[in-house]
Image 1 (cartoon, helix red, strand yellow):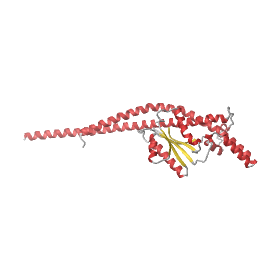
Image 2 (image 1 turned 180 degrees about the horizontal axis):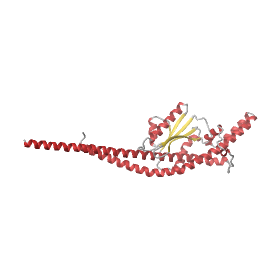
Image 3 (image 1 turned 120 degrees about the vertical axis):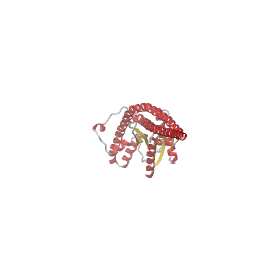
Length: 322
């Protein structure tokens, strides 16, 4: 049986750890309220920007398809002219290319002690990287967070860009800086598509890993137009745009990219804090149970020591009587 001194030292050590986990739980809870409010306010705006962009690009794709079909009877030259006009009118970030070279933007945290938050996102990104590589695509990674950087460095992953210091000051300017970094290879034609890999915040207990296509921004509208998606009369209605669609896209597409990245950052931050709150709450409960167990063990050892001393005293007293 361990000595009373060693048990007292273990109890003291666990109590010190419990103080740390309790403080971290309180800090995570306070920050989570603010992060949850931010993502709740931003999410409807981000979804609406996405809907408006998809509506405009779908209308543009449908109009271009109609023009191409009308020009099909004029021969190959007319069709080629229609397709060239379609590509020329498109915003560079809307042009869909075959996905031969893909960039994954992986959002992890700089610190640990947040349960399986980083493990889930890293393993999901690794599966995406390996599955796409097996399919013949060239995959590169842009990583936010030291945990993701260390994880993929150990696996010799093709990291194109590591973006440090993002979590120190979350703002629209930070999202724009991240967007500028990952847009550079896309604009040069070095990357055909960009995907976001992050944890979507559901609650403090639940976070869902999401792989979401960021660019080309018109990919979803193109797929809907190809599938003949006419879900409702309102969705298929013709709108008048002022200024014209080209000027609107020049403003809307960069806004869509920035807002989508900002939303992913906010979702990831709220998810991290929720995971940390849950992990610290579990650690706090485990520390309490351990303290109770050690206290019981200490009392048993102390009682056994006292009993042993009493028996020695009684035995000595009986020996003197004889």
